[in-house]
Amino acid sequence: MRFRCHVKRGDEVVVIAGAEKGKRGKVIRVLPAKQRVIVEGLRIIKKHMRKSQEHPNGAIIEREGPIHISNVMLAEKYDARAAKRAARKESSGQ
Image 1 (tube, rainbow, N blue to C red):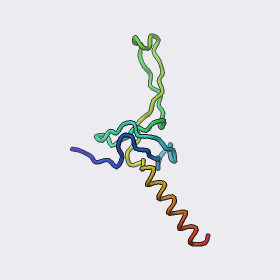
Image 2 (tube, rainbow, N blue to C red):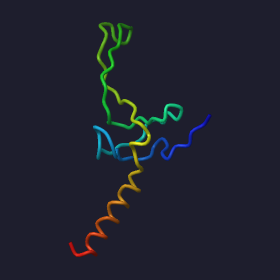
Image 3 (cartoon, rainbow, N blue to C red):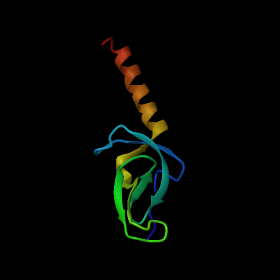
């Protein structure tokens, strides 16, 4: 079964819910089967690496973790929504 996503790789998105709320970033990868996206610079997790040729002593690497696709919104839509709210507030005289 295929899932349609409202974002694709390279889009700029804003996180609208969760611990990273309000932050922006570029979509690195979309995982449609899991309904998640990986956004550049957001939800940084620490991954413990075992010993290997690249990391002879092992290592703790920081990298981006996945965010549920329902918690992100295209930045242009988010900005348009904010502008619309500001315009409505000005016209009401408050």
